Figure 1: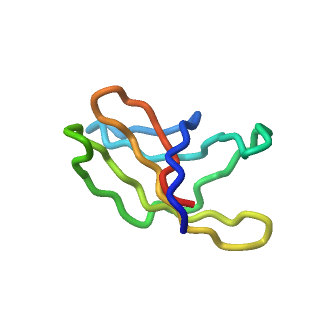
Figure 2: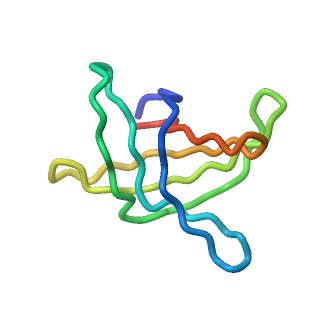
Figure 3: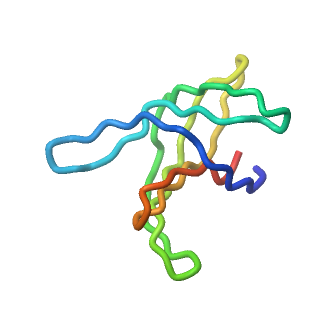
Length: 87
């Protein structure tokens, strides 16, 4: 898995207690083509500290081109910006 930290567009759902669950996201590859990935399953999530800020990390799984891919989506809790951090 490589670390990439690219900003993404994301669709999430929240429950009545405010718990966030990623549903799908859209990112751009190196050729600046957009692609959309549906989150098949959130395997784990945890809070982390990075460069003085709080980050919520989601370890997710999806099926991409008939292959199971595991990756990490990160949300900066201060700015609510989302990144794909490991792919």
